[in-house]
Length: 167
Length: 180
Image (cartoon, rainbow over all chains, first blue to last red; front, side, top):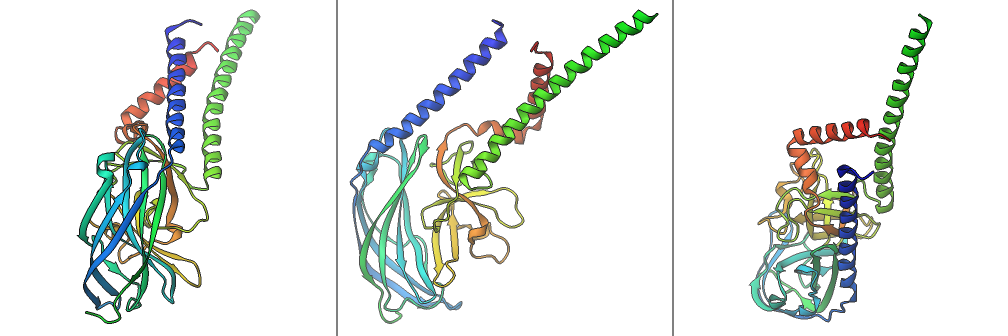
């Protein structure tokens, strides 16, 4: 009844249970945080806009992205993954989401940023529908905790439009 | 001579009963683990409710040895979600993030492109030959939560099967030699 094996077993079970409860509480504490993020995106220039040999339109642009995601960080946050996606509709596809840029914010200090960049990933359509296309630029973020539940949300910025002609 | 036969019989019957009851209790442990696993599959709607991260392609967010809790709902797949998918012909599932979505107007079906956060290029190199997009039926679930380090047990047991046999052998020995 009081052998070493019995004691080691109950100690281990207790330790694992306590650890699980602590992880759950840490994750729950993330719900108490109310984030208030802000962001702004500007399309500085369209570098080129062509139809590829496979029939798909492709556009390359230079963007200014600025955001303040500091309110997202809690003590249980490991990193925030942020990315900018262009969203638009075409006759064939009710929704297209194309990620143009992403980045990893490792800590609260880096969460207020301003960057000037061309799109990291190619903005290609399925087909040739991009001339004169209106699109939204949505900043998405994904809060990855040290343990527990992950949160994701976004800010939609509307009012962007591609040129009518290839260039 | 009769009582020798009786004693031998009683010894044999005790041993058989003990062995049988221990086999039954071992079987109960294994089946209750299986029941919990299948129940988790039902609750989360995913074929594989818990996966272990095997590669470093999602660092620094997910390191090798972390476990991910998956959930699959009928909600449409959108960019930014971390999905677990199987490529035709490969058995090991891959955990990466969706970076492109094209959803058809008429059928609601989607073409999805994924990429590991820590990889330079997208996952087209990992897909089957000639495959450019993933469809919904490739995707097993979305990652909704995670626990660090817990998955190392599985990785060690898979990569060094000797430890798995030693562990199972020790467990079996413990069950057999325990007094209850």
